[in-house]
Image (cartoon, rainbow, N blue to C red; front, side, top):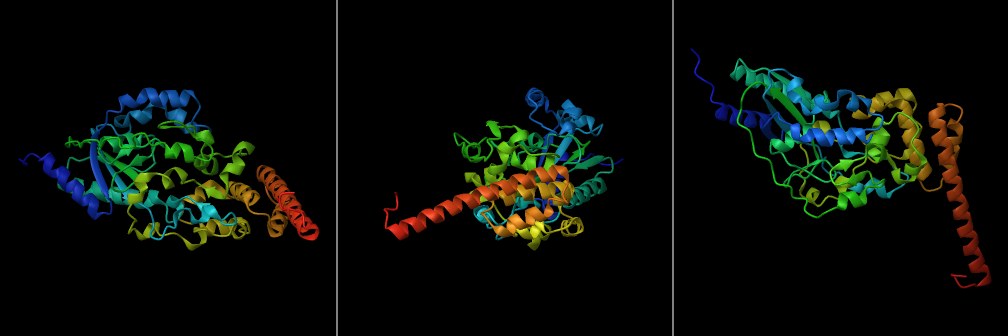
Length: 375
């Protein structure tokens, strides 16, 4: 007969194996998320999921992870830091002619990186304990991964709805293994946001409608990535030069002053995506887009949304005749959906040019007539 498994010892081994595989945090939680169901249903009822129909389609399944892999009784939650060295943070946000891409998308697609490591972790567990049965998840199924990670002690949920850790802030990815072994569970961290509402205040589109609640329909990450069609005019100016995702709520968070950078080479920024010129990206044809975004999470939005996002950013950029010429030249080539954003961008550039012309004319008048500058 086999000796009984010492689950406490196995849990310690799992955490060690996880760290050897490149996970900065490993925790274990039970699968009871019933406390999340009312909030999830309320979020869905208010249509805060926008065009993400799959959110409503799966409904309460997200709060019932045991149904995703029958026999599972625990979730092994992991996190992997992704903040690149020399990230420069909001450097590009301050230069309207440059494109801003969310930090998480600057390197290789994290789904592939993390899922491979999670599978390796599961294989190690199975080699140690033959009866182990597991399934890895990295945004690959309807599961409330943040509440699971919170129960597993990997952090607390901030008011921006992201997971926060006192040592590493929020610049990390989450993944989990559902497993059938009754491993000892970890204790959650205490909420340490206190009265801080910096993330709510800084949000360009006021998408954080109340603490811990995001109206995705207003969120720039949703608008640039998930939303398939025309972006409402009320949000376009606020998007600035953010062409894929938005990090503002993380950039302002005091806990991210303590964030550690990643040593993971796969998350090293690609030169073409790290604060590039907007016009350079606009000049990519579809083949170039596919080539430059191979292995990147950006590829999944497709070329049409890429052009839409860039058109808005170009409309928000400082006036440039080169921008106007490039947008005008594209009018006959883009889709009807993109064209709406191109024409908006041209109108914005024209308005900026007129404002600049009036300011120049006034300055000339001041110089020529010696009028006071506030005349």
